[in-house]
Image 1 (tube, helix red, strand yellow):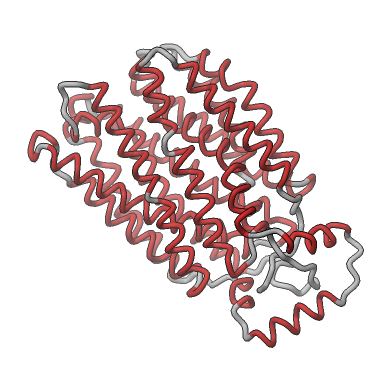
Image 2 (tube, helix red, strand yellow; image 1 turned 180 degrees about the vertical axis):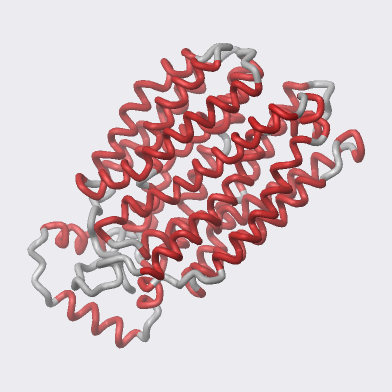
Amino acid sequence: MTSVSTTSPHSPQAKAKDGDRKSLGASVVGQLLEWYEWSSYAVFAPFIAAAMFDKSNPTSALLATFGVFAIGFLARPLGGIIFGIIADKKGRKNVLMTTILMMAAASVVIGILPSYESIGVWASLGLLIIRVLQGFAHGGESAAANSYIPEIAPKHKRGQWGSLVYVAIFGGSVIAYTLGGMISLVLSEEQIASWGWRIPFLLGAVAAVIAMIMRRHMQESEVYEQSNKPASATEAREEHHDNLPHPDPRFVQVKQRKKHSVLVSILLVIGMVSGVTSSHYTWSSYVSTYAIKHEGMSTQGTYWVTVVAQVIALISLPLWGRLSDRIGRKPVIYTFAVLLAILQLPMMNLIDSRPWTLLVASTVALVVVSAGGALLASVMSEVFPTNQRTKGIGLAYSISVAVFGGTAPYIFQMFVARDLAWMSSVYVIILCLLTLISMRFLPETKGIELQHA
């Protein structure tokens, strides 16, 4: 899987620098805005369905909207691979600048795209193409961010710093739902359906300009830069570290991991991410639409309780990351997988037309999901070598999110439409068990030094 070495206290991973903290902030702000733009689609899915598809069959239109949502995710592996190769050769910063520009441009186009009533099926096709481009950019953004932040983090805080990648995911969703709630307060549902749903996409593009300015001053990770030093210097450094005494038994495990292929790591990461991503998109994207369309919950009530639940989950993310820096990655991931497998059905069955039921169910579920999400960046960065890290993460993470996460809302809606809602929860439970099994075969990586070659 990965090949790393224990280094001196003066290594790039030993302590945080001021430049690293500024780069961390710039990276997180950019991701926050990108995830806001991405989440806005899910928040306003019922209104987008009415605007961009044939209104004569609302259920079919909603399924089509979630289908486009899923197709956007299917473009992520390609973006992850292509941008991952670029990031491993040219640096993480270049990719992070490019992807935020692409997401901003796509957001503007969605905001001004003519409706189905104006241009017919071309509206549906245009939305599909734009979401594919967004998915392509998102795959590259996720791959680079999940490599970059762990690389600039001190090794004893990598879990906590890495959790900020998922803080951005939740934070973007919180902003999207908060704006959705505010729009629902000011505008009628007819106004939202007519033009109000376009506001978040246009605002997101404006905010992205600020993020691009911040990212211009980001520093390339020192781990990446050292991995691209001349071969002679790299080999000499590795020989020096290999000759140092290594009393920590984890070093032996790390050396043994050299025998494993990157392909094995990719397959295990796909499995590990599957339960986290399916449960995340179920509880952050789909349940609000489910509560509105199938339980009769008010749009305004749904948005605000979803915001509260996600804020609570967001606060828990760094705590889960910090806990993993103390007790290890495996125990925290196991906690997520077991608890959610137990709670998935009861929490879904709790939801009815009363907003408090969604608040309780979403809060409990999302705090548990946070235990898994907080550790994705640190675990993935620790199982791939530096010269293949972004490409490996881009492929494994994007495939898992596309297959198991992006399709979750569509699968849920399909089962619900056939009065088989319980099957959706069974689907999530099975994937949580897959996460548990995959993590069993991944090594414990807490506190290791990322490879510099």
